Image (cartoon, rainbow, N blue to C red):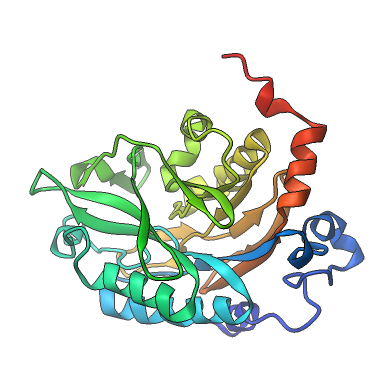
Length: 306
């Protein structure tokens, strides 16, 4: 359920830090990024935070409500969190929800919602069939504003954790991907990744000259509390790129607790918007002119030698 705080957070009042050109003095860094966004080829992007359960239909309903909220606030690119359609109670449950590429309720939802709202929409993780009947691909799918799938990334790095009472091993039911995916878009080059990938900076370097990193996640509370913000901000700083990092945030029927703290970070490492817990959205303006000025002032991307 959505708490009163999260519901209020999902629809910020006029003048809050989510609006263009209305940042308060304490948010000067964000003001530099968002000022005159519309006049500089900029756009708004949103990340969705959820606490998904095991029922696909219920999760799609909740996701749809939050996507509509983001679109109503002017977001042209909306990104859902990892496991948005299903946070299974058992690892094998995802096998029952697997879909063939181009078929199935999860993919239909993403395509139809993108087309109906006229937005670009990224969903993760869509369980797509693999060559191994005991495993699925953990796919990040990007759809354009016509509802056409324009990008697919199969998660390369599979999460594993044995710490105290927490035991996770995605490799038991997920087939690892092999290819980096960068999607050309009206918003620049979008680099697709997922969750545990954040710990492997070489993946993002391989994307080259990427403008916006999209990293839907479902960090556990244990690992998220220790590392989440540091990893997200580091990927933004070292690539001089915006990072859109929506997350799962709360308690799940499986007993799992996810860290939340969905955020959008600018190329200087400034957190533009954040939602600690519960269902809701983060939203911010992305300013390509500001990004380009940073890359000219600090040409670190051209200084790579290894």
